[in-house]
Image (cartoon, rainbow, N blue to C red):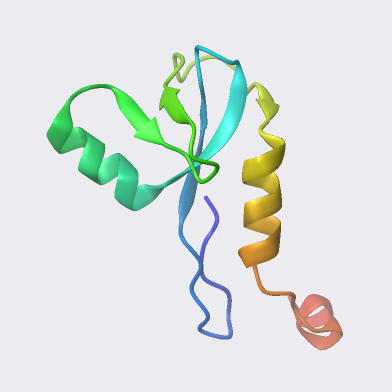
Length: 87
């Protein structure tokens, strides 16, 4: 799960969900998972905009969705060298 860093900046918390239609591992915001539980249609909106039909969670993740990965990388703040060293 991806999310807040130690500076207090808060990106969207996401869960990696592999889609049974395209076999890609997409990043789905946790708020979308919660909203989808009320809809019960079994589909989730990924960061890239793809409607994910979740593959069985017992299977390994598919290849990462490059657009989801780019969005996560762009919205995740960089840690300073000192923060990386100190953990």
